[in-house]
Length: 464
Ligand code: GLN
Figure 1 (tube, helix red, strand yellow):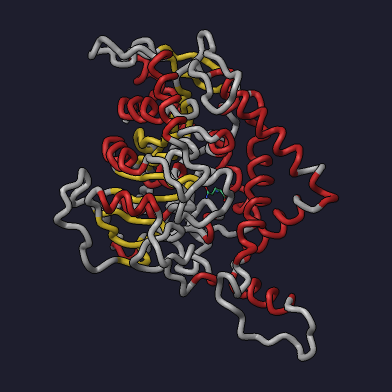
Figure 2 (tube, protein in one colour):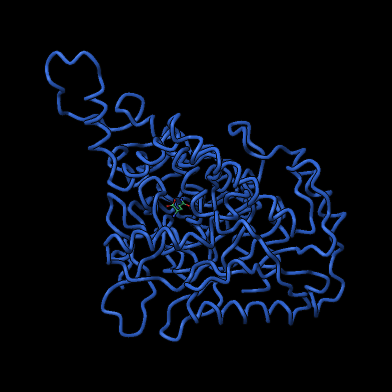
């Protein structure tokens, strides 16, 4: 497939911006998702309402990469405002997966919403790419395109310049062909930022480092680098929908870590079954509020259609602007998000979702050996695990088309494996571990305790 046909980049920068810089990422070209602000090129979020938008400033993550010597190669395609799992809800058209199955006459989806970033990295169009991960948008496309996709702990990388979807869940994530490249890029971007009050302070980073040093002695035997490490396989992720190839990959991934010295144990995360409805309640409630700014006055393309003469309020103008600017999926989600926040529905949906989110977080605290630096009272768990291993998706990339109701629900269901870590703010990484018999990439996910990103990436490098 030609690179243009993939539609991974919707804009390419023509000039190299930082060739002489002596930084650790000198010469690296970086794809940046369309919802992350760059000073060159558009930041459309793949939405009609921002089709002409250019940011007056660059996101902190982008500026840090540039000061380390990297060059922005261009902007990558996505689902509008990050809402989707296939990179099909985009004003720029869908992104295709560079991987195809034997005998395929139809392209496969690249996954979403950071499908452009994943396809660009997989096709060698850039060395690394930035994506955003609210509920799996970096990890799912990484798994389907056969690259590494990392969602850091919430707050590790500044969100300044990342256009908000669900602010309590949004993270800037990284995609690359190797875990080593992810580590180098992450090291540069993981820093406190006065422009984002949810970005971890230096004190919190230091507290986490101390907790990690106390609870995990460094490995001594280089031939068994994971000896003393405990890896949990969460029983609740063993769902009926898992494809055989995914199950096989899960088993062989666990066997590989065991061969390097890790103890593999079963763990239980009992509230996992609530994660998907909780995610779609909280993410959409936050989205309905975040997207209120696209009213044609503060942000967004204003409708030319004039409201009827003598209209005394502006609501018709707003309605025209928002109906024209947003795609169907975004409108559907704004409606749902607004509904769950109404006084009548709040107690039935939003409040229980917040309570369940806390229980999901506690499930993780009950299995990880490392205490959660954010939860006072969280203490080391005896015989707890250091990381958990589970599939990234229920199967390899589906075909691009099949836009019926069923496939919409199926797209939501694919988030089952990725949203729990998002709700708990935990670091998680998807690593390519092989291909299906017909040649499609399969990914496995590792997740660790809040703040334990360095250990997570170290372990992920053993799985790759
Ligand atoms: N697929 C999920 C959604 O549509 C996750 C998206 C994301 O992480 N941005 O909300």
